[in-house]
Length: 397
Ligand code: ADP
Ligand code: ASP
Ligand code: MG
Image (cartoon, rainbow, N blue to C red; front, side):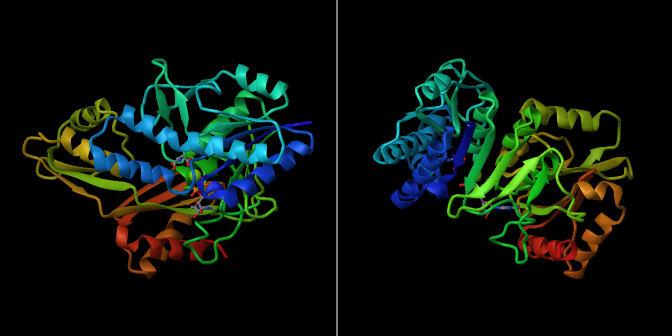
């Protein structure tokens, strides 16, 4: 007998038929003699609809109240899924995040899981119950409901798997695995049998929405393998693990992120301490900076350009409202396109090949960032889809 954690995303439970389908997968796993704990997302577009409802009432609602509202989506789907399993005649209990012991910090809207106290979960499993946990949510030290950030149910599932030392963690979604690029948008995208934690973490962080990046970070830390697979067919998916087969690929995947803005400060004094003071201001407002570019000083001045997540652009601009003689401009019409692959570390020329693919399509590169296993470029948003396809064509046959 094994302990299996399964996660079902919004599209997998979008309507009654899909709920019944998922109930079938869960009860088959249970019937095979396993303990089963499930993390479930809100149905279909429920989270977006709730955000829209809030906007109609108060576009500046506090993050605490937004979390209170958004957590309701997962409460509904957890109860409905439990009902579908009851109907099949199996013992089941649904739990909210706090009932399942999911404790988080107090960063409303983007909370981090601190611990999962597993007593209740263990007690329910000892009664041979199937346990359905509302994903995406937890509770903080003030006993307020928190949410984990969009796509956070993946992280709920991995956290449950880590806390319970599960034998398997399966993330069921609407594609049959992790692909070399978004299979809905890129022709020729290939399904991967395996991918390393590091590559998946980069891809997820750089815009491949198939897994929440924190879920990959946590899985790596605790050594939990994740399988990404479809709830619509019974077939193996992609395994995310420490060491994955290389499959002779230099580039394991291409990702696109349009949730990005570029901020330039032009005409800063070319003296020591300028970058420190600038980025310290942003750090104090908890604004995450991504790519940074500083020009060579000329005539006593220099320029600094950096990128931030789209939703932090306004806060960043406000923090830089008073920059003396320097001019601050923000461009939201940009996108980041990245290639990721553990193989590129030992192969020179990968970046050049990416830039050539972009040049062939006359796409201008605004900024570049690299690490051992990735190359990212910032380009005009209107070029993003064309760029992803061109770069994918260049590397993945
Ligand atoms: P869920 O609701 O199950 O959490 P998501 O919509 O969050 O599902 O994630 C699945 C989607 O991720 C797919 O439908 C696909 O369009 C998108 N996606 C983006 N990049 C990739 C990739 N490299 N491999 C697979 N899917 C990807
Ligand atoms: N329902 C939440 C969202 O739409 C969490 C999730 O689906 O993982 O972002
Ligand atoms: Mg998701």
